Length: 451
Ligand code: NAP
Image (cartoon, rainbow, N blue to C red; front, side):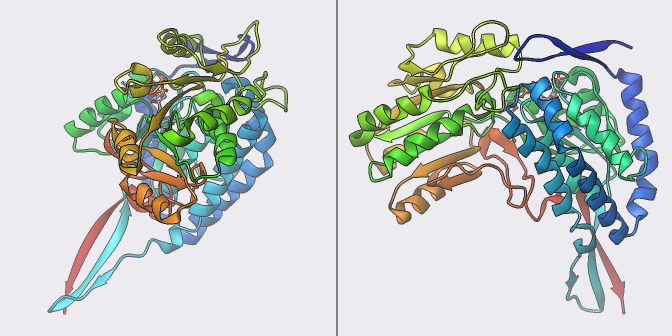
């Protein structure tokens, strides 16, 4: 069996070799998950809930271990990595409330009784990217398992370690074998097999828009259900009446968190023209003051990029523009890019249009509310966005006008597991999280019983 060497992106040192599952191995995992499905769906709702709560408790007991793996594997800061492991625990606890609440409806009809049932789909295939390996895995498997499905999950080749450990913890918590199976391997082998294998009844894909389109096209061949969480180019809109100091202090964290490798990164900042110069002068110290350090250091606020390829791609964007100002980054080993601010006049420029997926933010002035909304919506993406203003009416108006799935006013709220999350336009299809997520892993069945 071939292997992949996991590299610490902050040091470029090898961490461990991970076996890569081949096509036969992927088929075996899917068939075993299919065989485990009838027994798992038959587990009484209260017992399934108890097992998910037990899984959450075991994750809680291993938060430090999981976080340490992510610091080494993905270059995440300790603060982020602990939050991410805790997010898996919280997601499991939240969806452990679902099995006993999967109620159908009783619909009035003449001549009998009509009732609906939410039935699990069978095997669900979850494909995870490298930027948030733990949360994105949990957002898929927690509601899918709660709804009575079995799950096969492919982590990104670059970041398999926490997913593999979560699979082991599930067994330790008492989940039956093959109910949650981690299948490390290549996207072109394991990921594609989730799409083409007829026993996988739904694919949950998070990753690039380019690959997402291929996944969707592949699922169409079998009319297979699919959820897509794809790229973003989100705007942080700052009006002149906002608390500019607060907006400038918060802006770096909304785009440089996880070194900008965040689908929700507010990588465009739109500033009302009358406040533009003042905002930039407030932004500069907030950017240069960011602590960009090896994430092994607990004080680090931003780590490296995930790979040399990602670093080169981000540098390619920066080579095309003039950087207005930038923060610092370590020299020596590791795939570092300093947090960088670019001012943009031309909305056709590549740095304004494409997802950089690195610590780069583009700033542009706007004239009025209508202009701000038009500029924010001038993109094929629609994942998230922020609005800073002291006028609550305007905050709500603009939040309703921006074509994106997740907006926040006077904050850059991150994703909450108990509120829905997903994209408009080419940022995605379907929603994850929130109270309705388990329903996305079911078929609704209607039964009529004649009097
Ligand atoms: P990617 O290249 O599309 O890969 C994502 C996942 O798909 C990986 O596990 C990859 O496996 C797998 N894959 C690759 N080719 C495949 C294929 N032909 N069939 C099935 N699976 C395949 O994306 P990435 O570069 O890892 O992640 C960054 C992207 O994800 C960004 O665009 C970001 O915006 C997006 N993202 C979106 C959200 C959201 O919720 N909207 C959240 C996080 C990230 P291998 O890597 O092992 O090849």
